[in-house]
Image 1 (cartoon, helix red, strand yellow):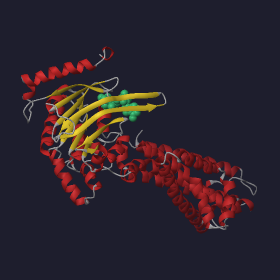
Image 2 (image 1 turned 180 degrees about the horizontal axis):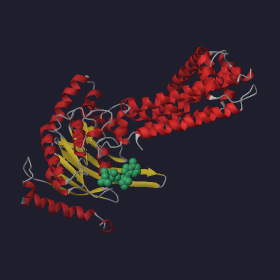
Image 3 (image 1 turned 90 degrees about the vertical axis):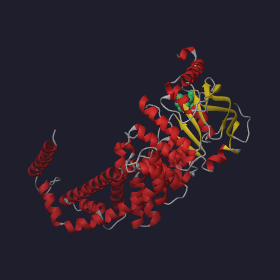
Image 4 (image 1 turned 45 degrees about the vertical axis):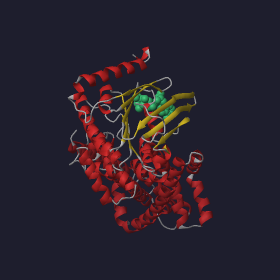
Length: 267
Length: 254
Ligand SMILES: Nc1ncnc2c1ncn2[C@@H]1O[C@H](COP(=O)(O)OP(=O)(O)OP(=O)(O)O)[C@@H](O)[C@H]1O
Ligand SMILES: [Mg+2]
C-alpha cells in the first residue's frame, strides 16, 4: 500500500531531499534523494546504521534544518509553516529538560510560550504528566529524575500542544530492555490517544516492529532510503504479541534488510 | 580532616602570621618605621572608624554604581557578540582593547570628559570591571546545549525569547561567577580614580596618608580597603551558590 504524493490522506511528503554539510575540509553529503510519504495518523519509523542521517532527516522534516535540495510538505503546507503553526512535537535524542525548572514547569513550557497563563498551563501539564505515568513527580527537578522518567517528561512536553506530528529521535536510547519495552507500550497508548502522526528514529529492530505501521530502512554513504516495510499487525500491540510468529517474521525480514545496509567494514 | 581541625589549623596559621608581623614591627619601632603592627593598625582603625567608614561609603558607592554600569554594558556586549555573527568578533576585540588601556592613563582622560565628578570615577570603575562579565556571559551562553535552541525553534519561539527564556539561564552561573572578579575590580578602579580626582574616599585617603608620611594611616586604610574587596568577593561567591542551586547538580541531569 503506497500513496501518491499529495494524496488527500498523506500527512508528510518528503521529495528528493538532499542535505550537504559544508565545512573547511569540504562538503559532506549526509542525505541524497530521500523521498518518503507518511499518511495521516500513521506511525512511521526510520531505522539504519549510525551516521546514516536519521536525525538529519528528522530535523529537515521538522524545519530545524534547511535541506540543500528537495522539499518537505506537511498537510500540504511547507515544513516552515507547519513549524510556525506549532504543529510539531519534537522529542530530542537527549531529553533537553531545563535544569532549573521542575518536571511540571518543563512540561508547561510550550503552553506558556503559546500564551496560556501559568495556572492553565500547569493544570494541563499536570494531566499530561499523569498520562505518561509521572503523577507525584510534578515538583521534581530534572536532576532528581531517572533517565526513563526524564524521557517521559520530554514526551509529555512534546504532546502538550496536541501536535499533529510527533517526532521522536531515539527517545529510549540507553534504557534497559525491560524499561524500554514498558515505555514502548506506553508510547503506543499515548500516541493512539493523541491521534497524531508519528515519526520515530531508532536502532532497535523489535522496537520498530512493535510501534510502526511503516518502517523506512536507511543506508549510508550518502544517507538514503533503501527499503520500506509495512507492518500489518493489529493494535494495540502487546508484549505477548511480540513473542508470536508474525511479529517475529517481521523482525526477521527487517533485520535482513538492515544487515544489508552495513558495509562489511562496519560489521 | 574534620571541619573543626581545619578551622583550628587555619586560625593557628593566621595567628602565627599576625604574631610574627607584630614582633617584626615592634623590633623596627621608631618614628622612621615603615611597618605598623597589627595592634597599632587595629588601634588606628578603632580611633578613626568614623572617617574610615565615611571614606569607605564614598568609594563603595562609586564601585557599586560602576559595577552596575559594567553589568549593563557587559551583558549587552555579550548578547551582541553571541547573537550578531557579523560584528561579534569586532565588538569583542574592541572590548579587549578598552580593557587593556591602563586605568591610570584612562582616569585623567575621563576627568577631562566628565569633569572631576562622581561620574568620571564611576565610569573608571565600570571600565575596570566589565570585561570579565562579557567573557563569562558569552561563555555561558555558548555553553547552553544546541538542542535547547532547537527546542525553542520547534516551539516557534523567536530568537529573542529563545535567548531570554531558555539560553540566558544557562549563562547565569558563569555570569554570577564573573561578578566575583568584576566586583573587587570595580572597587580597585574606584580607588584608583580617586587618585586623580576626588576629595574623599579610600583612594584619596591613601594618597594623603602617603604624602603626610602617616604610616599608621596608610596601613589602616590598606586593611580597610582589603576588607571591602574581600567582602565583595565573598558576597558574590555566596550569591552565585545560592542563586543557582540546580547548577551544582545540573551535570547529573539527564
Ligand atoms: N551540523 C552538522 N554539520 C556537519 N555534519 C553533520 C551535521 N549534522 C550531522 N552531520 C553528519 O551527518 C551524518 C548523519 O548524522 P545524523 O546525526 O543524522 O546520523 P544518525 O543516523 O542520526 O546517527 P545516530 O544513529 O548515531 O544518531 C553524520 O556523518 C554526521 O557527522
Ligand atoms: Mg541521531
